[in-house]
Length: 352
Image (cartoon, rainbow, N blue to C red; front, side, top):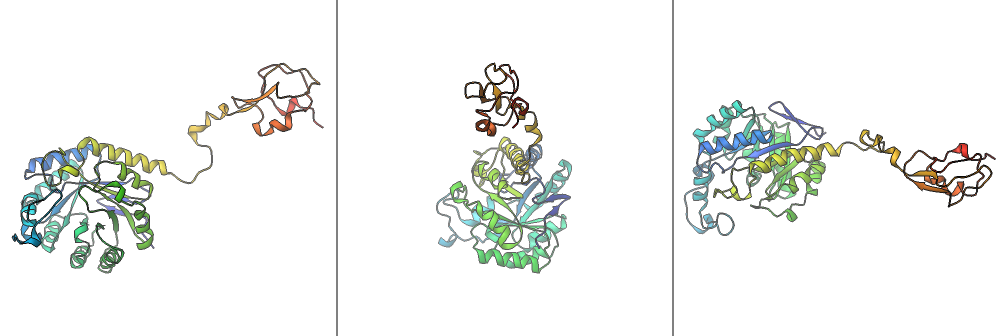
């Protein structure tokens, strides 16, 4: 049976709780730890639940090779080799400890996506409270096994993965000790078009694989992320930057601080609006019931006359008989003199 929630750093995550917002710092430090600190500060102000890093180096994630297979053609990183891209984008390992210390001082959770075993070892030394498996690593079952063996909560992104690959990743996690798992639907485009996101997959992931589900969102605004809440996303991950035009590897498809603030606010509002199945009158409606339509006398009528379409109408407010009685009232005998503007009641009818 699927767990109804997991807990990361004391925060409960699941359908009974507001969406957990992860601010992905990624490469948006642009080589400056002070910029990384600033992004963390803004994420905290915006209301994000967590900051996420990416833990790799150009040496651990690829190799220095300029053959065709290592070239990037098209997209944001056109013209670079993989080694060049990751050399400029990686989070220096010596930054991790001060970043974790900064998060503690700010009161915001911090964890990371490890990309190899040595990254897991580093993050374990820092007592990371959870782990994220990036979409490109969802097929790296040995890495998932190693992360699962830490016993920490795990989040897996599914960009580019088919059903079989997702099933294998989940099985590997669970078989190796992971008991707290969330699987994020993701489209690994940078940016990703909203019309390719197929958000209904969030529901299917939860049902098909018996897990909590969420969204890793690479679209350039918040509409897709907020919409995902209605489909059960309990985690939303978005890249965050100080300046979308900052020139960094991930800046162009990241949220700026004001947009992150809106995401945190609007996703919580969307979750609150889901509520429960309810056909009863809500508290907000109670005072407006009197403004519904009802039957009113619209001309003075004498006792013994008949109710007609000229002297009875269905109008607002709602203190008279319900409009459904209109046709049955017409032709009935008036029991007493009635003044124009009187709410019609059963007492005004002669009872047979």
